[in-house]
Length: 330
Image (cartoon, rainbow, N blue to C red; front, side):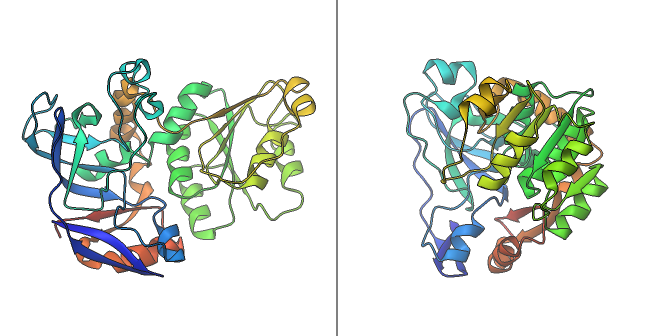
């Protein structure tokens, strides 16, 4: 089978790999759509990697004993792996599995083997392209908004309008929330405005915090969602959110964010949370957003055949895009 691999700085190719084996309870999926996520960072840095991608939609073509899906099922392949047996897995929070190490099984390939309990069925009439957005396109932000309780009475501040941040806009607007955003990329600003974001502030503006406060009657937004993974955005969220507000972080970050326990949390009374994905029990709600949101088509800006993998990575690295989809069989 063909599989994408980064072989040098800004160089990605297709390599031949054996189809993966199937442990008991697993299934083999023929990938029809593989969304791109943050793989462009390794591409730009020249990080050698032949295990790319972690989200996909496709058709089950082979099952092992004990599998919970059948050959012919159309499925969304959830990111990473899990044991399927611990309390968190049984409750639907598999992403925080207490037993298994989180292993990324490459989905920028023509086939992927996955634990069958992480293959969620696609309803009839929903395309693979749209169903694939149930992973990182809408997933991290949906889980975050669900935990915070964002609704039509809410104002939410979203920092970072990459594909995940724009997915957050889709989710927030579907709930009827008022959205304020922080982003410097003009291409993505335009998409966000088309999605109904009320105000977009440049993070380089020294008056950014004051402008956010002014837009919320001096109190600050009810909720904050950081999709950027940038320390300055973390602090902006903490400083901007209203007293007793909530902030959730979904953008990956390996740096330390300064936090002052007394003034930031005890006296202000805010709640800070991290979210990685959503509980699998709310998958039908995610599908409802995908099926009914008038904004969903704006989230996907480009689709590439596997034969144009280099061009797809160049575009993703340039960031003049929202969600980018790959077609492994074209």
